Each structure stands twice: as C-alpha cells, then as structure tokens.
Image (tube, rainbow, N blue to C red; front, side):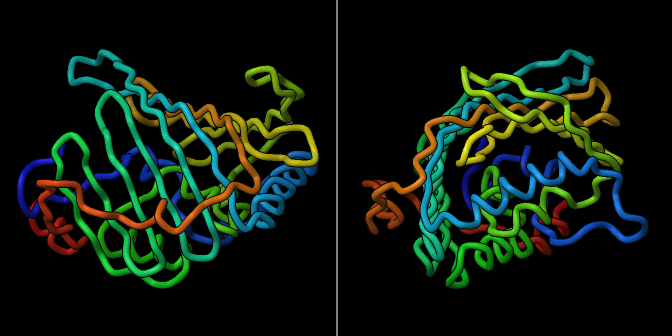
Length: 257
C-alpha cells in the first residue's frame, strides 16, 4: 500500500529477491552448468538482445508467508513494452498493486492508479543505465528487469552453483526447453520456447532458505517481436487531480529503519 507524502514507492518486491542486474559470474570456480542448458540460456539472451523493440504479457503469482506460518498467494498481470535504447513502459494490475511505470529517455515516473499519486526521477538516456540508477539510488526495480537488460545472460547466470537441462515440456501449448538452476539462496526454473524465437515462457523462483519456501511464478505470453510503439505510450501525463510525491533515496530509506 502507498502511504501519503514522502513515501518510498515499493515496486514489485519480488524482483528484489530474484535477479539484481549485476554482470558476470561470481568469483571462484566456474559454475557447473550443463553445456546444453548453458547454450539454450545464451540463445535466449542473444535473441532478446537482437530485438530493438518488443512487448509481452505476464501473469504472475507470489507467495507471502504470514506470521502464523500460513502461506497466501497473490496475483498480478503485467504488460511490458520496450523500445531500445531509451523507452520503457510497464503496466501492473493485481491483488495488491495497480501501477504504471514510464521511462521516456529523460525520466522514470511511477504512478499509483488507485491512490492517484506519482513520483518522478531524472534518469540517464539508455534503459540499462536508467534502471541501474533507479535501483542504486532509490531501490526501484522494474519487473522482470533481467530480461529487459541487453546482458540478460550475465544477469541470469550470476551466482549460479549448478544448472541442468530437464527436458522438453509444454507451457500453454508451446513446446519449451525446461532448465533448472541453483544458487545459494534460491532455485530457478525457466522454460524457453523451442523455436527460432527462443523467448522465455515461464519462470519459477523458489526462496529455499525462507520459512515456507515461497515461490514467484511468471507465465509469459503475447510476445510481439516488432510492435508499433509510439512516443506517447512512454510519456506520462498526470491525470486530473494526481498528486506528485517524492521518492526516498536509499540513504533516507536506511536512516528511517
């Protein structure tokens, strides 16, 4: 829930516990990733990297563990529109959040539709740099940012201890390569379409060291590999009566804990 005035807009906390966009493998020995799994993950990354614009829809669920130990599940639908190098739009509608994120090459704006509040911050002129700035300065994360970045292979393989090829399995009628990876803190499963357009179709993250092992699940569909995305899609115009508030910086957020 977004509280009035000088609040910190929390944007999809599930992303914070999954993949932070930091390039490269962890130090030490190379992770034990099966060659076939590694090859398919690279193919997905290379294909996404080749797209100058794309859009997709995702139906997400996330588990929340109550103090009683009961596990509750919440859902939300997300629509993502990317036009490289400097445009991003994300619409979120779900059980808890109804938000929109705009990036127009100059600023990032997050708008809460239910409360009619919005906050903006100046941002660098490329998507990757803008998302880095938002994360580092304000702990603001775009949903599924790991596949929005051009270097998605490095992001997805960060900290991996092992990776395996599980088999060919169907996701919503689409044949996919099913891959499984482990990290110290989470287990990751990803289903990648078996085609000339190897996009991700499903993702499951299990927080294995958290009591109750909560999961985040995303089912990705509606991929458009060359959509017509006009400038106005990425430009935020405050609705009537919308109130502007401020993001709290990471330093201010830490000092208030």
